[in-house]
Length: 367
Image (cartoon, rainbow, N blue to C red; front, top):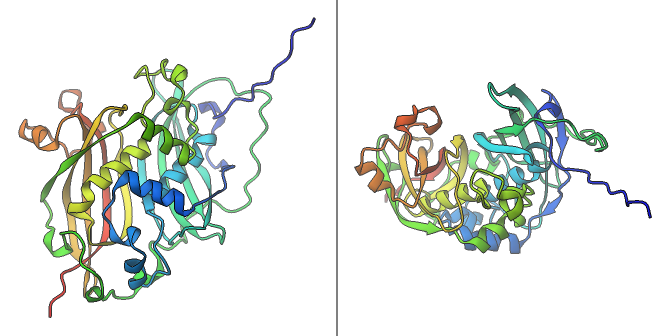
């Protein structure tokens, strides 16, 4: 008998397969239904009213409760894994994430990515790939766009892998709106129910807020949500593969860590937020495993009034694992400096996430 021949197509791309200007139309095409939204809300426990309450969203002029921006960001990140980062060693940076249009339950989303930069690492067979990813709905509205950098393994391209299909729509965002058109009008905050504490007048640059409640990551939950968002990197769900990695076991997908840290801060900082204007300068300085407990802290970077009843506030949001932020601050740790740019002796090993978050926030109404 002759030995059977098997074909293993292989997924992801090695560093050598990326070139500036390449466009990948990611194959995922997913309808965001009420079940997905409910499952995400049940996990993230986010207090931002616009994304939780249909009546609140309608009072703002939106047609219904929109999908939470971090659900859209997680979908875009995960969709892009297939072409961009399934052979990545690490996710290095989130850059300029924006949400120009509202997305609603029943919408179908897809994504494409453009390669903006490639840089071979000084050591080892690997390099940094910089991409812009754009997420669109069935009407071709841009509902999310962001840039990210990943460290990708080097290697010989797989010879018999089919070439990616040509782009069917431009993967650009320069003409996209920075937020939904409804927010161009002045918001009458008096019509809105008061949520959790924290109006834009309450935040001043330099304030530090340590969020009291932590969040322990469960094994089943991080596996289920990774699959819900269609993240296909085996490091997050295939134990034999993960044993060869830095943690010797499955690592929690970073977009989930992002969502949980943001949710831990939400009762203190986003309970009266109308819309997320963007995220920037984000990174994961360390990995998270099932069983780790996450904590969060925020520092106000900027606050300004932009309308009669609304303001723009920028926070530096950080996450730690297994040690509360106030303990680390009490020990003299500099939690709010960019972790990846610090010298080794100044790094905070418990720090797992950092990003700048800018929000449109309602103000206090006065008679």
